[in-house]
Amino acid sequence: MGFTEKMIRWARGRSPWILFFNTGACNACDIEVVAALTPRYDLERFGLLLKGSPRHADILVVTGPVTRQVRDRLIRIYNQMPEPKFVVAAGTCATSGGAFWKCYNVYESLDSVIPVDAYISGCPVKPEAVIQAVNLLAQKIMKG
Image 1 (cartoon, rainbow, N blue to C red):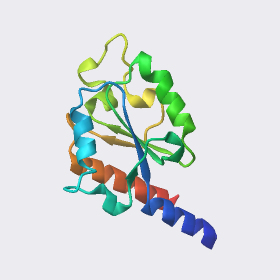
Image 2: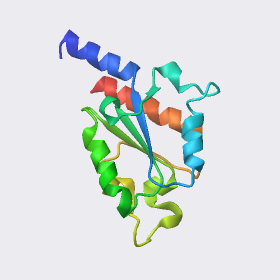
Image 3: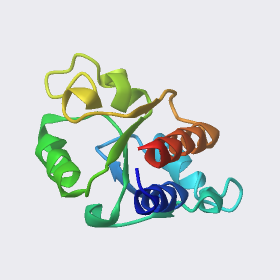
């Protein structure tokens, strides 16, 4: 691995950009994920920026149960992200279906639709857990 490759990994790990996607959650996890971006928790101190386009994002944070209606949109967004790309399943609904488990229109979990790199459990998730998951993924980005 050359110097240029090390610098690219270092830069990507120091400034991961996230895309936040709600698949139809009750908004409790959404509020907590957005709270991690506020000055109280300040995810931006790690260089993290919230982006509105999947073409600019390194990390996709998904909350809510994955329904049959949103599946194709989620796959399209995932495919639009550049490599290397990482996915975080935030909350019980994204990790296991939550209260909608075994419903006819809900997939078992996010990883049955797209590959997931980190899971954040809880209903709702804690901002500290969101920070920890993003930091772990930033370290993974730097290692390659």
